[in-house]
Image 1: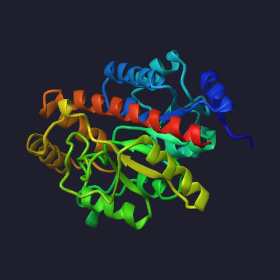
Image 2 (image 1 turned 45 degrees about the vertical axis):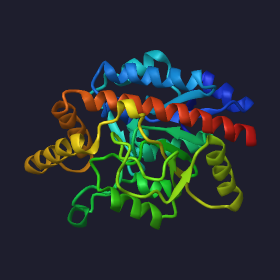
Image 3 (image 1 turned 135 degrees about the horizontal axis):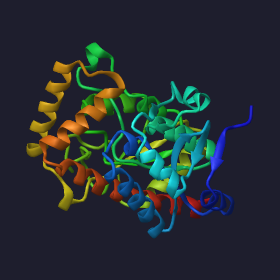
Image 4 (image 1 turned 180 degrees about the vertical axis):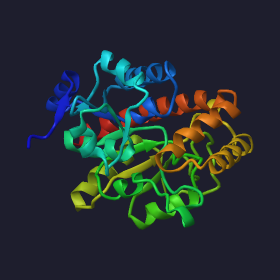
Amino acid sequence: MTLPLVIQAEVAEALADGTPVVALESTIITHGMPFPQNVEMARAVEDTIRAHGAVPATIAIMNGAIHIGLEPEDLDILGQTPDAMKLSRADLAVGITSGRTGATTVAATMICAHLAGIEVFATGGIGGVHRGAETSFDISADLPELGQTPVTVVAAGAKAILDLPKTFEVLETMGVPVIAYGQDELPAFWSRQSGLKAPLRMDTAAEIANAHVMRGTLGLPGGQLVANPIPEEHEIPQDVIAPAIEAALREAETQGIAAKEVTPFLLDRIFRLTEGRSLSSNIALVLNNARLAAEIAKEIARLR
């Protein structure tokens, strides 16, 4: 079978001539934010990447193919598809063959980016070990993907709704470099501090790019997680966001929310409990991650 890739013209040209490209996921559009903020955010992220010297490649499944880069009209369609499939490694192939519209999670975006030859990916926060995983075994496929697919992922850490210590413990076990950007402590998505010391710290995009290329030279599988703290002016401190997270978690448990529905439910409840502040911060941190990802992609292109 032919690899079902549809590469947008701008992205194809960039890949052919060595221009840096940054992959972007699509579940943040379909499952992370309401319309029209989701499409506005997606366009702003793409514009930010272009402004910093790289080409954006938003990835989604449409019409039986993996689309690497979306035309403006496709982005509008995706942002208004309420029943878009949420696709990870387990169901990516089925999503393609079904012909339905599907949004890619961190794991699926890494797979698709690697198939297209894209080495850097910007997102909001990765999935991880859910609270209570010792009984539910609810652990995101994002973690093993980071251990096997060679893409550097720039995020504001793992989503703060997760069990962060267990999440980073699993990443360590899988041999994933977790790099805090510009500080000694790991960020916690909406908050700059998590109380967890970072295993690695790097202060420049060049350092991160060099480590990425060296991993390939050494034949090491997997990618890197770059934990980029949210800008101070957009931060929601732990003492403010923590009560909202706890309340949302209690509601999810009471209502029996499980599996892929947990994260969208929690993000929506936290949005309402913070009167929209969590969404504003979410958008700010994604834009911040896009800027850093573009810088890393440029440095990797220079090394290549």
